[in-house]
Image (cartoon, rainbow, N blue to C red; front, side):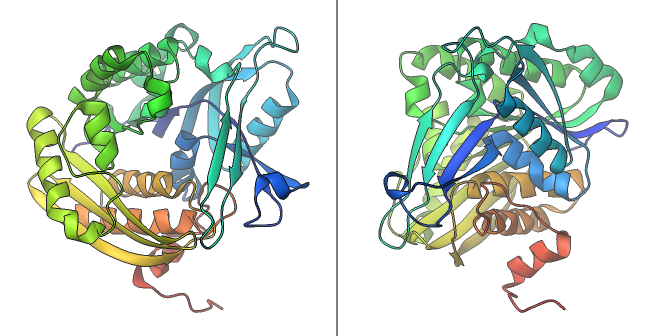
Length: 358
């Protein structure tokens, strides 16, 4: 896959920014907690964080509630992550108007599984609209190496669906590579199944990189694959490969296919693996045990590491190894995004070296 050589931005992601609330007492449930930790969040900015922390120029396209202290908190957080941003300021419209989404998360502990409550009523990100951005300037004059799209934003509202589709079309016109993480959510698709299936398939047809899991590929693109939530995921690797072959046959223009593998032993121990098909070459990371502080964001960390490796021009095997490790890294943070200190820290995770560095 050839990336643009003249560019201002390595990675651009459209997103709906919000806040995430988790108990300060790590592992405690929300309903028994009276003190909460607040962070700025979105799946797509989680992906961009890997490249941004490691020094590549990244930008999010979003919307903000005008005058909101939460919007200011989000902007300050993005700056702290070295992520640039562009977005319209939307009037709140009174106390019952627009606001930034709220993600309320119990990380779980041991045998008590995580619970996540999404409070997205009045979400300002649902207003993302192509008319609010100069796409010819962004992709034509400034230049973008990779546009990363997520199925979460693609299905958030009719406006955001068309926004993502037009972003993909414009990126393709200007030679920007397109990464599409399918990120299927049943509640987002309810009542819009055919409309979204058509949009997702068009985006997939012009993408260069497709990312998902067994459920994402099947439910977003209608591709046959193994049953979701299998107990022995390592034994199903050939089934996953068969599913990816089916996706490749349906979307022959895609260069890279990635599929994460996760088997939950307990809340704090997962078996974590991945499959990558680059061209005709398979790379499989057999599931390995990782320790988990908070699982939310691990998949985004994987995508972030994969895109970083591609942006750096690495060989596919090195890319998926790094992606595995950035996914594992993200699960060691109380934020839902990993914050790598440097590449060496990530490679230490891949090598299983948890010894102190002095």
